Image (cartoon, rainbow, N blue to C red; front, side, top):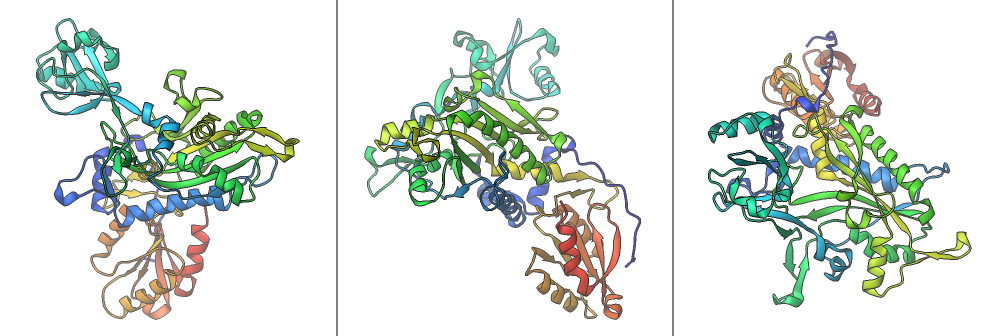
Length: 514
């Protein structure tokens, strides 16, 4: 092995240039994400995380938990914030979802196509209205895609000749003129109707109306239901936070864009309880704190933006106070635009007030630091999608590099990468596998390490590039005489020799860099 190589210029990561189909193919080929029930043809809206995907997801999850609960941010007064964690049940008393507003108002408008038997969210369908034909397309489709479909239908292809409106704004009486997104005939779309997004289940031996329950559509309510328990059992004082990571379930009308919008997903949510007069300050604090965290896990500043919700898109709990902002990421399927990655909402005192009214339990806070003032705390909620976070990190890391045999590498921040290093004996004989095994046994006590013994060394380097391993240590002929190994750095492909005794310190030094 060569003891050194000239560092190459690192290509610039650009999620806008990532073909989504290539990213999805890489995820399956290398074991990041598989379709759920793959051998049976999958199940729309459900995904399984493979050996590398679960490591990546767990790394992101653990870093969030550490930043929120173990070492929470420093507040405006220079002191660490007080945040504790919980893990609430996926199925709660159904009365909780009545109080939260989900049973009565958690729905999306949907339309069905009688011809294709497909279902669409009405607010995701755009209608191109012309003099002779009205053609419906899914929101976000490129102009080229629209023109190809118009051509296929034998219709004029000049987009400027059409009036473009969202489907819910079309008068129902005009539906007979519309050709659905995948249809060939006009008039096949049903009028929009509300579609409840909560999955129903039954609790107990008998399937009666009294046994009806729901899989939680968000993790936040489990926090509100435990607010009083936390106050009574923990030494927290206002302001403080309660954090939770867990699965949530939404019966999405049109799950799409890989793991971005699915029916089973994971959330990382924290509810920050504070005095109403301090809500604005904390709202602004958490916006900046959360943006900084995404940058700390390797998401570039140019891939992020902050967008404030318009009044007509606010959730019922955020219509008062400061509203909601989204931290958005430039996903491959939204570029050059952005899509939601995390929301920071001022939920005011809506949830606690609702649960106090419906449960009969007093949830006001007695603030001894404010002359025994009683008040219902306001809540600031940073709520991130862990599953979406994984997709953002994957897209950010996907770096095309034609100079490599693999044609690309995954530029994960080292502390996020599923594998921190790989141990590669040059050949599977002459004592090299034994040295590799010994080094692997030493390093695995400290980091997630890949031991890869067989196959051509170039192909093994290519595999490590595709799974984003920051460092490869190769045991070669020189190792057997001078007890040194070749270390290859992922991004630059530069190589150098380090002693076997220095491999662990080398990793500790380089992996600690942010």
